[in-house]
Image (cartoon, rainbow, N blue to C red):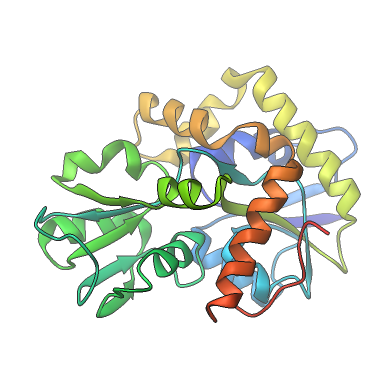
Length: 272
């Protein structure tokens, strides 16, 4: 039996899934691995294309009829939220502005919509993640919504942070910020079994970080080692091993608030 597994090429995902993807977790099937940005996996999961897949928490309302949320392997945390970046420091809100975003069902975009509800942008365009900062630096967009390693590198593009949506969310709710989730297809994967596999993959990653370094760097492309280390240190944390009560509360708060604003369909509490 071979299962399909999809996650991003970002260092946190390759670090977490190194052992699982390389057959180092005892008792697992073989995996056919796909590397794709989260906007791609969100859309593919809606079509039921993968057995195990990393998606945005914001996409769950469209996916939980086919998939089960797993309590590990995802990305939540504190001090790790998406940033709204601008080139012109005179810009103080998104009202009437053009904004590049990494996907319309990403947690980053949902948080931006909640944060800017009283002063929404004029136009939003989906742009591949790696192209957002250069496009804002060129003046193609007034602002860009970025995630992951961009929080360590945006100054190199001459950009400034208009808002840290993680700080805003944490200050407003007191909860960690839920970014990426791991889900298992209900008809093809036993969720308890998959949870055990991923927990062991995470355990191995922490036990011997050097073992995955070549794999992580190969997929990080031009990201230097120091940024890779910062990235993993920030996004792979206690919530990666287990969502726990705070993690589940954060997901429920995000989806409940978004549904109340009419931004996503109402979703049964995923922590129940």
